[in-house]
Image: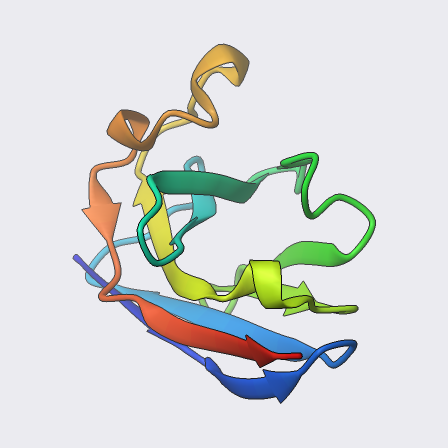
Amino acid sequence: VQLQASGGGLVQAGGSLRLSCAASGRTFSSGTIAWFRRAPGKEREFVAVIRWSGGNTFYSDSVRGRFTISRDNAKMTAYLQMNSLTPEDTAVYYCAASGQRVITSELINPNAYAYWGQGTLVTVSS
């Protein structure tokens, strides 16, 4: 199984970016895919999650209302649309996936996800 994250780059504060995470090697029709991020000098942080089946989503407080996670089942690709970016959003963003449904209490736990992408750097300038 491989997760290929892309879409990172340099953007000014207030701008937008869309990250993509393409999955290959197996299907995740009943699984869960999430985005985490790690800012310089900080711990890895949960960002958003979506269930492949049903499309239920959940966001961290820091991005709710600005970021939108979505998925295209046919393309086995998840997206993270990031709007109103601030310098505090600067981080390496990782997509992660579980082949099974992750229970609600574990959605923000990185250990619940067996598969990880390589990360894509997002830099927001002030």
